[in-house]
Every structure is written in C-alpha cells, then in structure tokens.
Length: 364
Image (tube, rainbow, N blue to C red; front, top):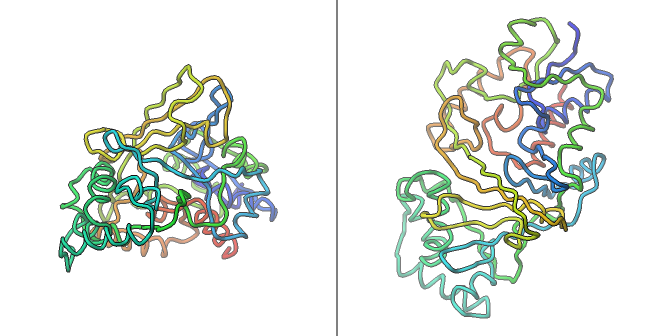
C-alpha cells in the first residue's frame, strides 16, 4: 500500500478531499481519465480570457464557511449572474422579475404584473397539472411559459413539455422587484484567474496521474491504496449490473472572434426551440475582460448514450429508483467513498460539492 487514498477524479470533490487529507499527513494519489485537472470546472487560458470549457460555472453560496474556505485558494471578483433571454426578436431579463414583466406587458408596478399572471392562470383552469407544460402554465401563466420556458426546456430535455413529468418544475421563481441577480445567495463571484489555479493549489502535495482510466489502473494496481475515493459514474463502478442510469449530455461549440464584445453579457439564453443551442457564453465578461478579442461557446444539449460525456442526471422516477438501488450497493462497498455529481447521481452546485467533500473528510 503506497497511498492512503486513491482518489478517482481530479474535479472539485476529489481536489478538496485530497487537499484536506494531505494537510493531515495522508498520502494521496489522484487519477483522472481526462488530460487535465479540474473536472468540469476546468478553465483554459485563451489570449488572457479564462474559458470555462464545460459550461459556465458561477460560484454562489449562502454558506459563509464554504465561501471563506474557497478564498484560501483564490480571490473572487464581484460578478453577479444576470442572464438575458432572447425570444425571436425580443430581449428579456432573467430571472423572471419586474424588468421581464415590464418589457413583456408594458407595465410598471408589481400589482399589475401579479394581476396579469393571476388572470392568465385563472383562465387556464388547471387544477391538477398532469405534465410539465400544465405545471409551468399553472405557475406562471401563458406568456411567460410560451416565450421563456417552453422552447428552452424542450431543448434541454429533448422532449416536448407535454411528455415531461410535472415534478421537474416544482416552482418558477417569479420576483416582483427590479432585480436581475439570478441567485438569491449572498455570496457570489468568479475566481480571478479562473478555476484551474484553485484546483492546482488544492492538489499540491498529492501525486496526480492524468489520462488514466480507473478500471484499467485498478486491475494493474489492486493494492495501491488503503481506500478509494470514487467520483466517477455510480453505475459504471458496478459494471451497470442493475441497469444504466440516464443523463443528458451537452456539446460545446467554441469560437474565437476578432472583436472586443460579441453579446454584451456573459450568459444569453435562446428560448425558441427552433434555435438549436440553449445559450451562448461570452467568457471574458465573467472577469470584466478588456481583451481586443473574445471567445464564445454555444451549448447544444443532446441525448446521452454509454460512452458519451454525462452532464445532467435525468431525475425522473425510474432513474431515482435505480440510483437508490446503486447507492445501497455503494453503502456496502468496503473502503470506498463515493462522492461528487457522478458518484452520487445528483446535480450539485459547486458549493454543495465542496461541502459534501468536507463532510466526507470529517467522517473519515
């Protein structure tokens, strides 16, 4: 046994765990099948612009302990996520707030907006929503649903809203204030210099092997460590013996442009189903960049099949039941800690990943 922990995955969960354990004098080997560290928060420097290679990652939290913890590794700027939505030739602010409603209906006061929404909901008369479409209509009325929810949701899931279960949208945040801040959390920002230097600092003192598949490595080195921290796909660990968990995948189309400013905002959503991508990210705006060029990424959601990059768990009843069975198997697995988005089959915000990793450390 050359190491105390073999950590599978150099993403945020694995990096936090490795950092904490090396601080405690433990020997950690971190392996990752990709050619870089950082998992999905990996940022690449393109002419001074820190490009979020796997989609926009905005750090936000209500937990001051986690906010302070992250500040050990980087300074954060004051970026506030305020996306813009494009529907046909119309522009709307997100989340749904008084700026959205004022643009949509030409009104000024919260009461006017509430009256319009309530009137639309009453006209629809949906008592028991049977699908996502009916659920969204019963929460926000027809205008908000048709312009800002329907097309975007159908692209995300690759299915008609009538064919999606109602529970996917438990609520729609309608805010009757003129405030475009997407998150309610009091702490929010982007690390200056991107996320990759954070993970580099976290992995100091650990040995790191990239381009390394865990299952092949385990066969060749069965006794390499006392314990395994596994952040890969939960069903893959058990060789899919109970069945395959489903995901949605995303394809990123990156483009460097010889212009200073392409869209004027970091995140612009395209809510028509006819537009094939869900959003365009302009990375320089995360750090208020002034470079003479810019880099954009278009995001195309796609069906997932075994071998594709998994992004979002499909949290319907069938997958939740199967995941619960796999989690029960994981509980019985000796000397293996399962964590992260893939290892627990849950969609986690970054602060929750850090918190879960610190809890796993404390449990150890």
